[in-house]
Length: 330
Ligand code: NDP
Image (cartoon, rainbow, N blue to C red):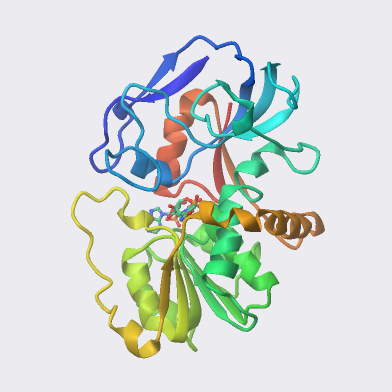
């Protein structure tokens, strides 16, 4: 099977030459293991950080070794109790066609309940990030006005919709094109949205939320975070979820220059890592699954075909080529 290796550590924006597609033998499962034919691979923003040789909450990718990440697929050989050939599983050995791994690291999923790729997106890690980041980290409450950046992406599109379904007073989103802005309002039910490339974020946010905001869900950092601090009302809460505007920066980022406003406004800015919120998974799965079935919540995917196009999908996601979750169909 083919698998992607990190060939060189990217400086700034990753280039195709930083990656190598390598043919490797498919390993037979040892006792307690399964072999999975991957059906969908996830490409996620956090993977950019793992390409750097820095200490973080996940270890860096090793050079010349297979990369990993979320994947779903079907068991094709099993030497483990509890998993049989034909079972669909979610696991962490993405970026490749075949994975042989300990069954303990694979989670059985139900392809009848939702399309397999949903377990990488709306019903998976990004979905839980949105759910926990809004409800637990930002302590969202009915009547809040919520602003989310990266609003047409996997996490952001769910944050806005969950806020709407939970009784937000007003939901505002920003995204990188007029087409995405239209999707936010027309498909996802945002009250207002703007294209952050079309003008200063602070000005556009003030227009979209004239009475200020109570919650900011930050996927982007930089200018967006500074604008949100300016727009937040007293006792506002910020979920620091991501800072994708700076993941490919080579110089040290600046700002937010207005952080001292947080004092008088008694703001709370809290970082999050989705792995800390596993206890919420059952409730998340039931509630979001219910909204999906009733049609109250919409989830989009951008699907790139072919393991050989995984790098292109990853780079495309960093550039904003996706609406909803970016996945690779193997
Ligand atoms: P998305 O599906 O949102 O894809 C990334 C999007 O980022 C692109 O589609 C693009 O949309 C946008 N983007 C790229 N560059 C910029 C920029 N300079 N300014 C503003 N937007 C930009 O990815 P995810 O939903 O998977 O992740 C969203 C964020 O959440 C990321 O920051 C990620 O790191 C973070 N995250 C954090 C987790 C945690 O546990 N803390 C867990 C999961 C995700 P556009 O066209 O609008 O520019």
